[in-house]
Length: 91
View (cartoon, rainbow, N blue to C red):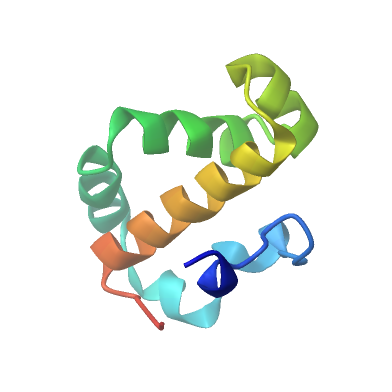
């Protein structure tokens, strides 16, 4: 199982383009609000810290008292969950 895990600490992830991808512009504010309401509180919190407050992973880790790697994983997971709710699962 360890061999199958992706090491998010070494992968580059472009935060600026995440929500500006072409396919996401088709959703209105109601779709976004409904999808966000369906997220867990943990996912909402982590997306708030990263996307709204624009904190770095180091700052998120310090705030939540977790490792930087765990912060990256939580942000990634929360975004994937939001993508699924919006019907944009590509993987």
